[in-house]
Amino acid sequence: MPFYSAQEQQSMMLRESTLLSGLSDFLCFAKESSPYYQQLLADIDVSEIDSRASLASLPITRKSDLIKLQMAAMPFAGMVPQVANIARVFQSPGPIYEPEADEHDWWRMGQAFFAAGFRAGDLVQNCLSYHLTPGGFIMDSGARACGCSVIPAGPGQTELQLDMAKNLKPNGYCGTPSFLKILLDKAKAQQLNLPFKKALVTGEALTPSLKSAFIKADIEVKQAYATADIGLIAFESVVDDGLIVAENIILELVRPGTLTPVDVGEVGEVVITSFNPSYPLIRFATGDLSAQLEGVSACGRSNMRIKGWLGRADQTTKVKGLFVHPEQVEQIRVQHNAIQRLRMVVSRDNDNDKMCLLCEVAETALNSVDVSAIEQTIRAVTQLSAEVSIEPLGSLPKDGIVIDDRR
Image 1 (cartoon, rainbow, N blue to C red):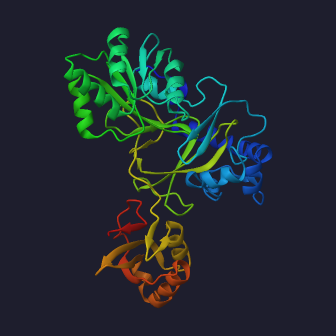
Image 2: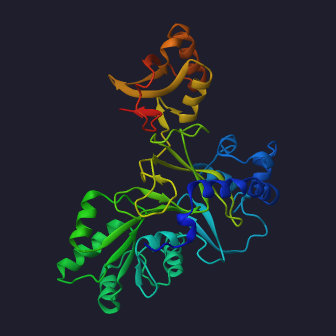
Image 3: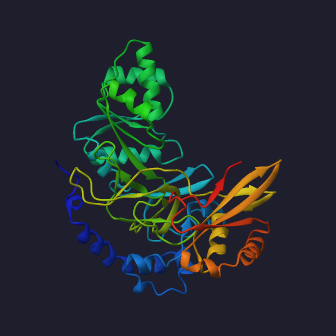
């Protein structure tokens, strides 16, 4: 099977050593050239950060904080180095502003298109928006990196889209899976056959019902996981075999509300360090949940695999008019050494909000647990009262949920 680059086949050990050997230099560059990282990393000797363990000690920058960070320092919160050659500025809902430098396949999407079967000479109908948000440009650059020609169709205007497909006969589609289904349904109603034979979809979940519809239409569909800040994070090569992490990034999965990476198979928040000198992102928390799969892909690409999108990490909820955040739950845990893992369950009884903190404790530490002290910590941290339930070690599911709102 051909590959987009030789990097995709390199041993996991070589890839890891290459990334980590360049980590401290990249962090030094970001700290020297970016006002944001000068401040964030001011008291940290980044020249000593050369392992995943030491990387995990660095602070996290959350995507959810970008709005207020950018408002304080327009347009990119001081993250973009002054030497960067920014060609485009986008605005995503929020608003959040994203840069694009004037470089070939800056978003690194070529890997995903190639794995989805796109090759030189293909004609691709790109149905992600080119208006303000970078989605259309992200897909456009990846398709062209594989030698494809692109129709910048954007979303909507289904009648015009069908006319283009009928006249130009593109063999490829990229965009959301739901819009591809809309085009299929409209074409069927008009007794037309869409020319698409392959598709790369993103931005939404590819549900079993959508997969079934695309198989029936004889369209080979693969998925890409990308964000407007980072570009490509992971992509599908073999159907239902997980998503392969893109080259030239470090992906961590951390327990929501903490800096701490989770074990293989455990659900955590996707955190990315992107080696992009035009837009350095260091331990950038996407807000998405996923989990690492064991082993490597059957296609021969050797990078780690993740399960894909498993929900959102931001589990903030409101209880009796006050917000409770995952970070607050973690604050409670670190103040009590006996607690290994925990989960705050929020429920409603007779129209009254209730909280119960489930605390995993090892059997050897049961006698040292002070429930009343934990209750006092809960009140001090959240300004709310809660019951405390001591649970045996290993009883809580490893699903990434820190705050379980059952109301």
